[in-house]
Length: 193
Ligand code: 5GP
Image (cartoon, rainbow, N blue to C red; front, side, top):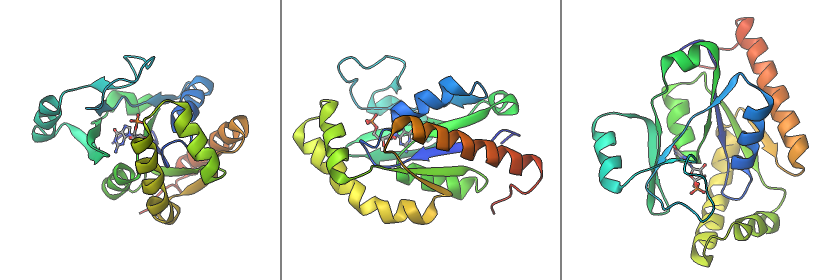
């Protein structure tokens, strides 16, 4: 794809992926955040830039045109990562914040991708965070059930598992993992295939 790293940040809903990737890209200017497409509605107060908000028809047209690096259906909506611009990967490392099915697709297509799998400190804390962002009850339960079934798979396929307890520690830990992955890549030890 290019010289830059492809860094996949995955983990269950409510683990704090969105906040973490925002802090990562703010701290490290070499990191470039991919903007996904989704068919879900924009949440109250959510930035218009958070996603490309598309209709199911627009999304399906893009699938048919081969426009996604990966895409999935997650609890009733489509989510997908557009193919990255090769220029972006020449000078920078690309960060994808995606759920587990998409992470598996990226690892299958691109084994050099670095998969960081995040876990909440506890289910209770995860539930509290999910409720805190105003999702309806049925969505909260659906996300908690999904999290439980996905955790073993995430642990298995991840290159690094990180527990998001204190946010600033998590971000520091991830930046140091990324720095060591860059070093390995530079010294030619980065092949994971
Ligand atoms: P949310 O609706 O909370 O923004 O996102 C729901 C889930 O979809 C989250 O786990 C998020 O990481 C994931 N997600 C966001 N964008 C993408 C994408 O482009 N591809 C995939 N596979 N998952 C995504």
